[in-house]
Picture (cartoon, rainbow, N blue to C red):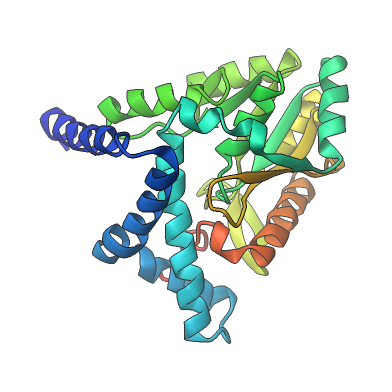
Amino acid sequence: MSVYSDYLVYLALRSLLLGMKLIPYNKRVGLSGKTMEKLIAPLTDMNQRVHRNLKLIFPDMKREVREKIAKGVLNNFGRLFCENYSGKEFTDRAYKYSIRGTGFEELDKAQEGKQPVFLVSGHFGNFEAVRAYLTMKGFLVSGVYQPMRNRFFNEHYVKNIKKKGAPLFSTKRNGTLKMIRHLKSGGIVSLLNDQYANQGEEVEFLGVPTKTRLSVGQLAIRYNALIIPCYGIRKEDGLNFEIVLEPSIPLSDPKMITQELNHSLESMVLNYPEQWYWIHRRWKNLSGG
């Protein structure tokens, strides 16, 4: 796209988001979920992608079950999009969230001793709910993000996710170097590790090998960092979350650590299949995505 086209797209999306803000938060989140599920997804190949991935992993699953999961996936995605652009309205709700898991105590102890920590999640529920909750509890939780191609909207996007915790580091080389310096100083780095990575290694996810980054394990071993799997599970009301911080993963070797992270996320996906982003091309060469 040209700079002019990028700016027009930015204006359209910003106008949509500003218009949505005129609707009360609770109704806005629900409406965004339905709009994604009923209007936007049918105009794209998102729904077909969800079905292809589900067929790959669950070949015997009945179509009506896949349909139900697909609707939930798209609805959750729409809700998350709205939440992540609602700024303070989203972060102010963090006090309503519940929390479980011994990882919270490990995190607290690590911070007292200035030990580096990786908080690792996936595209599940709303991963930003974890940062919002921990920020509310007084932790300085940095984030790692993939810059958007549209530089105008990227500025708006970064501004919004900063409200859930700072500092933020891009996946570009300069951002990665800054992230490592932050980690070495005893900082907390939150990131997602469940997308296909061309430069990664074959590690099983949901029983099927797929390329996955090993960098979390490599850096954790190098700097003696805790690795805590964490999740923001959407509750039945569609608005609040249960924050889960699981026990830290032993520092063995990078590939084994990555496999353990995959197993952790697998458990969440199997229990809440509609909350993981089956939209992604996680198994690029196998699902036809």
